[in-house]
Length: 266
Length: 331
Image (cartoon, rainbow over all chains, first blue to last red):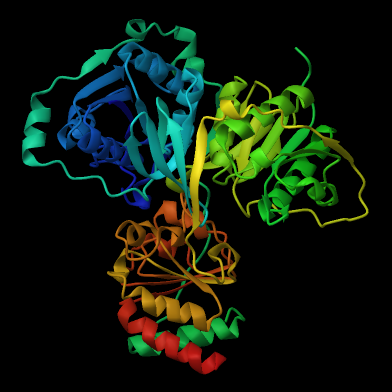
């Protein structure tokens, strides 16, 4: 079983909202000071799903990541969790793309890796929240896809995926190879153990440039984007919170109920 | 290349009627179509859906494409994608709108890639650029910390729209329109996924998205037991209870109670946020609430930046007293 997991390095979404700042001239987010980037949380769920498949049916997990300034500690985390190989598409030409240019580059890399039964992605990235790259890879490679999955099993040459729907789930059977995107309803990603961390430290990722994967310059990065960015902004929040005080918590609670009643909220 | 014209709305159905999101999309589509001086069409795909065409017209469509086939009873990527591809090739709309639902999230990206165009998911606003006449798509990014306005130069322009972000038109049963029935023309062998089982897991009763009052708990509730108090308060107020993501990930409450960017979008009259920090991802799910009340022992919690009323205190001391007072008032 050959599994490829696509992961993305993002600013830490757990950074307090107050630290979120935009550079309006560049239409870019300023990374929160003092907080290192992380692997997109949904991609960690994808790594966990891959590890569970490998534990059950054996196989090899190759982690693939596109970006610039990729911190080795960060992108090696899936290796520390138990993945086998790491391939980085790291080059300025890959930067500032949209889902199109990203899916295009990742698909070329996947073709170069050559063997795959399962391609796993997170359902969306915590920065742009686009939620399309997994489906895009499937469309480019002509593969079936199952999105927003909370449980994944491989049985023979098929995958069984529990797909999250509004008030429950569907159990979907799909023939391999296939693309599956994972969601946070999936069991929690494991913490790397010390042995895994030490092993990951010693491993060197493979780094590919656009020429290595036969990428046409006009189709990667900003050049290959089909979505054009007009403006990035922070919506103004103008709510003023009325704090209810009281001599005791019970007093405050009472006052709150009365206030809500008075304002016809209750 | 033939010119792309018109706004097309993918209309989901529930129980033999248009889903609320479909009516909202038709409302948004109607406005956009008027701005570019073009027609609005609706697409209804499913099994036993032929009778829904009149409802789509009543909500604003000039034309309804009906594709009715047993193979389309439940959403399957390949089946719906093939049908939509045929319709888009036939009708060549300039703009295609879908709901940001489990169907829209799956169908829109593959449709966009198949047509070599761009989709924008989870739009909270749509507008026509006065100069270029292109669709300007506004969506939250960075978990809701920011918003981005995007457009694309290729047709069709595809967008999914967040639930409750745009109003439906008033239903007008006197409206007339054209109904075009298209056969699915599907080869079952070309559908590469199969649904082996389908389970609805919510308990009967009030759905989160429909509740006028929602009581939500965050990480500070601490365990599953604590949520029982929220459930009681919700019941008293004839509402529903929900949670931010951490209680769901910790399995204190069921996943489908998650309110937020990747969970449910709610817009009740009253949203009571208990021991909940108010991360942007969570606020994406509840910021449409009319009144937000926050109870949190951290005065710096982000929730207080969006709440209308707040108490800075331990929820374990506030909630019982508040619930008792509410019981008094409504009892």
